[in-house]
Image (cartoon, rainbow, N blue to C red):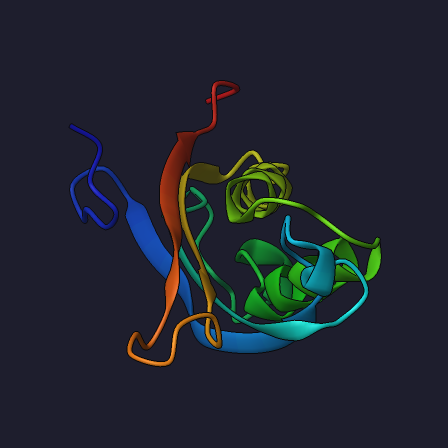
Length: 129
């Protein structure tokens, strides 16, 4: 099985924790034109470069790029299912060929009064690697 971090395989774990954004998401009529809070968590398994870091941003997967990418997906407009949103985010993460796998959790935060969140978590692999 693929590990999310593995020194022997030169795999680094890059993550974004508890990113909360407003999104147009949901299948119910009251969700079509009303934004709601969504929490995103990303866990990426990233192949380290052979040449080392050299303290250069270009030599790593930039988490600012990941956060911006999620926001851009949200800005494209309404999505019906959290599953669809998770797939879009995973595909964005896997555009960088250094990313071997992406685990994406999408949670809607204000759906049930007696539940902190509801949502989905998926894991996708980069088949280019």
